[in-house]
Image (tube, rainbow, N blue to C red):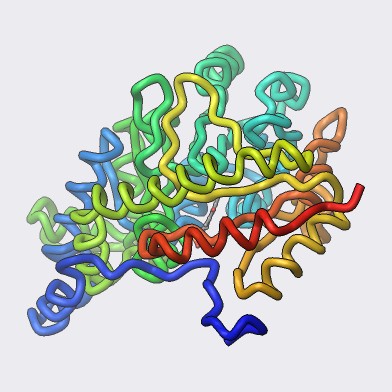
Length: 385
Ligand SMILES: *Cc1c(COP(=O)(O)O)cnc(C)c1O
């Protein structure tokens, strides 16, 4: 309960999909609880349909899918991977674990995505890959980024943790890079608590990806009857999720349209009903460029300065609404300084937005009254100027 006597509105509450409990029961009682079972196949098929990916492999997390991408690219100590500073730690960690150096590029002030104009300036003879993170599921400038990667012979990986259901000029996010990673963490649009996927759009990676996911063995081939014993054939780890989690994920993916419709309704109300207040108070709303369809993953506001970020979050909390800041710049984080390098020009825009951004609660089951309350609470806030 809050000072106003009402139950607080959480930042996130995972949706329970129509068949979720039935499928979980079926998986638990069906006798096949390890990975690569019937639900893994069903979830994978749905994921391929939504993303139009060449191949998809469920993983234990997006973090692990990113680690698999680093293994598949055969990154060596000293190799460099270009990525935004404004992203989750896993984007950088996955490559740093291989001894590669994350090279942090600033973001665009409008979409908060990697500034494609600054990528070329960050390329050296050690550069091997570019990771595009579609912040809030709003696409990076994929046409330009794709051309740069082609010109310099760099791999393109999409960290598509936010972008399932997003499009760039009609093409699904996750279908642009040689590889793309998805997250099914509890905070994402489609979730199974902890989970992820690696999308493979270049067939040359498929065979090895299966091996890396299965502890470096050819067990996937063995299951398909293509070899009579499975053996240790490469390095790898345990990146295959249980079929029980795949059951939850299958139900979630089957309810994708329902979940997305609800999330979009919340997003659209915030954007419309906060517009006047935001304008009056020098607060910026999300910007979605023409040609980008976003999946309503998050709704953020940019406050005029860092003091107002703090006081706005405190104001919301006092009124029983849980708002939150977001990514802290990786280039300035202790591990980012130790393992990474900042691109020429630094990341002033990233530092600016990290200190001003506040996310509002956004989940499928946020009901109309709760949305009304969030809007009322937010717009009762008047930044002093
Ligand atoms: C959530 C997220 C991840 C990590 O996802 P997990 O499934 O929790 O490992 C990675 N990158 C981005 C951009 C994310 O938002």
